Amino acid sequence: MAGEVVVTIVGNLGGDPELRYTQGGIAVVSVNVGSTPRTYNRTTNVMEDGETVWVRCTAWREVAENVAQSLTKGTRVVVTGRLKAPNAYQSASGEARASLELEIDEIGPSLRYATTAITRRAREAGAGGAGAPAMTSTDPWGDAPKSAPASSDGGWANPGAGSAGADETPF
Image (cartoon, rainbow, N blue to C red; front, side, top):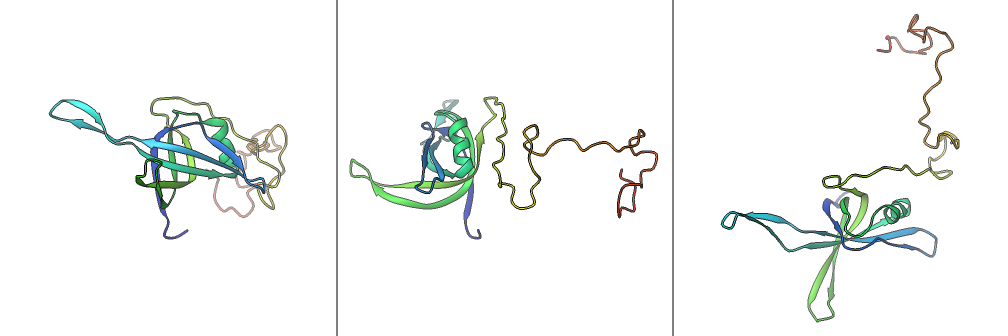
């Protein structure tokens, strides 16, 4: 949507993701991401930590379920999303505070200091919309290689044949 502020945050999860469901059954997850700036102090020749900035991040539907299954407290993440207006509130000690909130578009583990293994989730029925190819249990993403041409030459003996409407050789 026009006029929204899109930001990317790199930081660590302050706690395990909190997965909830709305009354309508829609999944929503909340995570706190803390980002601490580090600067080099030339007088002491030491890296110094700045004040940690905490951002409350929220994801919905399948992304929410994926976050809850994949990420845990302390995981370094890269989050991209739309920044919401800060909420002003008063802390238990009476201090005036404001919280930042980010509606997550994309989130994943940072691979700077860690490795990960990716597991694709099978699409739910109807998730592809009308006209989506039917899925099979052996190929849930429709990534199966196309069947080879019937001729034994692999289609290279006559490259123009079979390319309906193409005027050029396919290479």
